Image 1 (cartoon, rainbow, N blue to C red):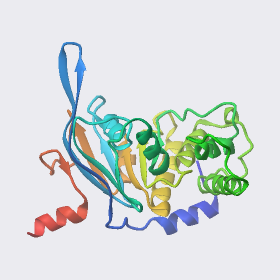
Image 2: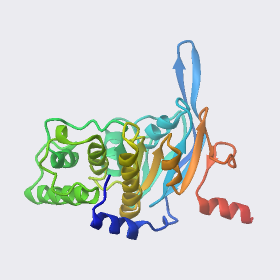
Image 3: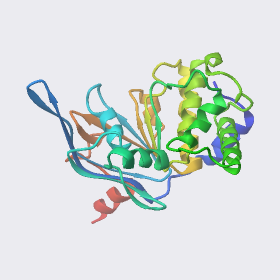
Image 4: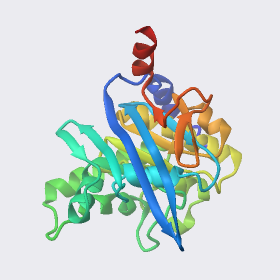
Length: 274
């Protein structure tokens, strides 16, 4: 479990409310797949807004469409219908892009934290992060960029409680430490959207709680919009909002939202006041 004093103090200072600007916008998304002779609807009229610095947890049974929702939001899978956009500082980004355009969107705007870290055994901890800045490049980056990448990697490793461990091989790390490297790697390119798919499923309770603390911390500190899929009620309770996915339909966990819509708190309050 992580307990460095400096990290604890930063986490306490950084847990402020998310701002009211929408970052991720999903509207009317449907996705069907062919399963043998039948067609199965995986996402059914899904709508969702996530603000900058906000954590939205998505719960639900296995096979309900949670991971597919992350794949659509992360430009890994294209829906049949609907709008999926990221309101970026550089303008609106279409998250239904395909091919090379999709790869560029993921590289520049999205951080992906998978259940399995899938770290590269031949690289050190620091190199796991730095390699993210080299994706899509043909020529080596200039010296100044390499220096900035090393500094960024060191900052992130410190922020997840791994200061001074950059030269270690991942094979020497515990499962909890590898999960923290997984999270730091996802933040390397300063993503505006952080997609988290049950990274603590294989961890003990103490390590899982520590990683959840870090997800909250980095969301607040770096201002990402975070969509977190989890089966763990304790982790879901740490989110700003909890939604439930059942048979491809997304609702408030309390069952309040209908029609597959799950909007931001500000929009729900505005609608209630009308």
